[in-house]
Amino acid sequence: MVQARWNGAVIADSDDTVVVEGNHYFPRGAVDAEVLSDSATTSHCPWKGIAHYHHVTVDGQVNADAAWYYPDPKEAAAAIKGRIAFWKGVEVG
Image 1 (spheres, one colour):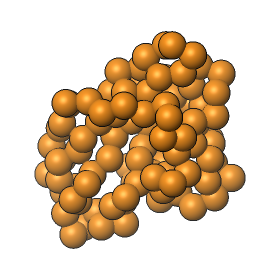
Image 2 (cartoon, one colour):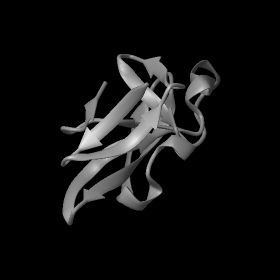
Image 3 (cartoon, rainbow, N blue to C red):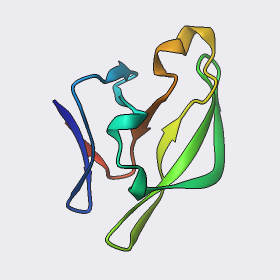
Image 4 (tube, rainbow, N blue to C red):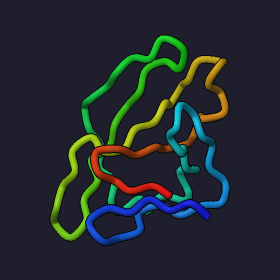
């Protein structure tokens, strides 16, 4: 079982993650939707496509752009469609 934790809370929990470039991508349903809010931030990966971001909020503390996902990944990254990964201090393990 892999968990993502931030600010003392488990924000994702799954035994079905996909690891790409060292990052665990959790199924969207395994992530606590109440801690996520949309961000206008995007970034581009040459082989995965356009990433979109979420802010993570726990106990009133906001971790801006701490979660990302690829809504329409390129074919080479099809395995991460519908999945979310974390960074910026979110502990995954």
